[in-house]
Image 1 (cartoon, rainbow, N blue to C red):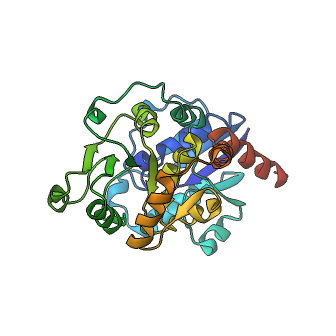
Image 2 (cartoon, one colour):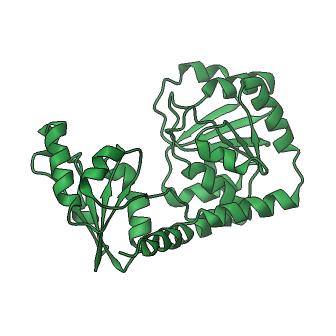
Length: 292
């Protein structure tokens, strides 16, 4: 069986959904997740073709020792996948092909959010439409100034954030139309997105994950996005891009008033193309083209 080594950009828990979603579809490969962060609890892994290798006492390993451990583990693989930027000169030492392990989306789950037949979240009962929603962590990595400007200019709009709050909330208390609902179980997220009139992606840098954006596309919802992460630029025909708070307000107005069935269908097409099934098929195609 061909062997794939994964060099992660983040610890296991941050990478788990992506790795397991693709590993479950790449059943013809033996996959090794090289956990040089030493923060893995592997007991919960049930996929027969996925295992984790962790250096002993990884928490106290210096970077050089971790890199040597990764080199040794990767040297046995037929191909190396990375989940983020990785020095090409370092990979060249392994003498193995390097591919990127992409993010994706559970298309079927989030496409269900295009129909309002999912359970109505109880903490949205008192929130009035239009709802401009965000799914994902609330932290300083977001362009929060966009939301503050829009919430002040349009008190009739409700801004709903579903995800862990990792920044101070005192400044938000002045805006009764901003609702921080906190983290929800992943399987509840489609129900929330189904009630959003507009979905917002306000990442402040290209280091942000695009998976929230893919979920919005799968749902077919109108999207207002900052130009980050870079993947947002791939969807300019179906998303409203805003580079300033003023542009954000203008784009929200357009998105709230959107009545374009073609854009809905096109978003769903983009979402399907970002599904885990599509990602796995494309990755397998690229591996086979390497003639390993």
